[in-house]
Length: 142
Ligand SMILES: [Zn+2]
Ligand SMILES: [Zn+2]
Image (tube, rainbow, N blue to C red; front, side, top):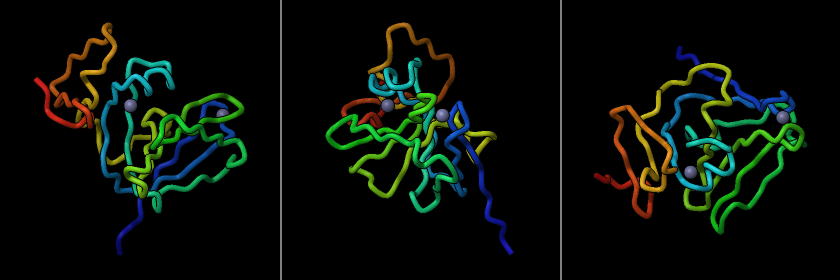
């Protein structure tokens, strides 16, 4: 009998709590300018799961959705302002979740830098992970 593994996360104030059922599909650092501004950080470490493996356990009434582009929306806690989920009509069956909002480790560690050519000039990266970019953010760059 297999065990369904779940991990939990939440916003800073704790009003919003959510559960993710493993396995995840992706984990990487996004250097795009929208992530940078939305999270107030050099880059944002996201992981993705199918929407069917994601559920909000409490605080759904505090989840505010913002249309951040023609094809995507970002959600945040209306009480504490924590930046949370990101969804795109390009990949409608997935939800992106910030790794930093999880209580514990997930089933993978960050695998790549995406939109790396969009990074802030002051961002210094010292790891050996693949650095991807271009229009899709996912193409190899040198
Ligand atoms: Zn909150
Ligand atoms: Zn981004």
